[in-house]
Length: 111
Length: 112
Image (cartoon, rainbow over all chains, first blue to last red; front, side, top):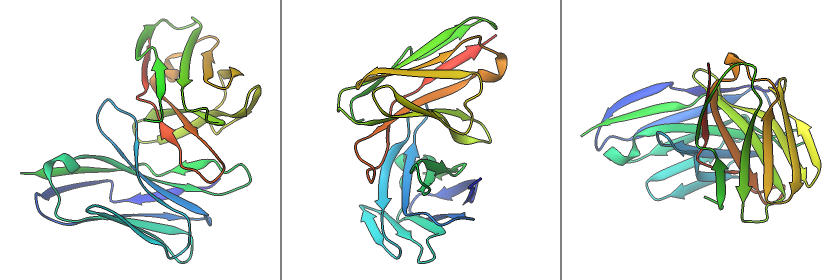
């Protein structure tokens, strides 16, 4: 079946640094979504991407839909302590349009 | 988010007992989903619904059943719980085919 490879698995950075994470797929997707999950809560949507090549920002977050439609990346600029959490990518493809999720990138930020 | 309430939020039960988890939404979204989240596996789809009484299996449906008798409610049932079903269960909804999914806050289920 379809698989997503999300990297890195974890990151431990200093406050103020920029962060980059990405997802790659063996299949083409027509939608890429990025979510953030805090402990004890459900994933919260950060950015949705619907077209190949699309670059979308949400505050300090920027995400891009790869032109091959098999990858996406998320950048966080000038990280702050509240950026701590697990970030998930998800791709949508196929006839049912269900999401396939990456296994997450755990971000830790040192003040 | 998206008016999704999951109940209970926590449950501990014994192997072999039936368990039902409830997802209630107030947004009138057509699509509803049940996922389980386990370390090392991320979020995996159990079952989903594309309308009242319309449901289908996801990637890890064995041992689970669902029902959707009203737009706002989507029930997940473990007929005879096993320890391998210890997990955190998330419900999600979305409005239309090109809309993103929004998640509830999860149910932590422990089966002893």
